[in-house]
Image (cartoon, rainbow, N blue to C red; front, side, top):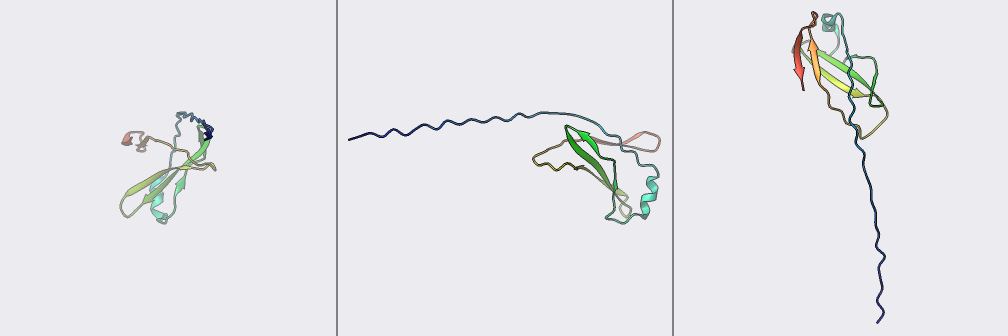
Length: 101
């Protein structure tokens, strides 16, 4: 009886993760004028680059609840990009009013 030997398929792969950091100052002068904005309108920062990708900060003020929604948006045409951000809000005198991890 003949014995057949199955070939052994060996494969390998690797993944190289990198961590980069950057910062962007987005100053909104005349923020009180946002009271006249529609609820779906946002104020967007200039595009900035961190880690080879383009990003922007979007600010959605909500005049009814006196709150604000802030998003860091990926502007580059890319997938599988993750970001961790730290946000600090300053008042008009430059005093820290909010700090998010």
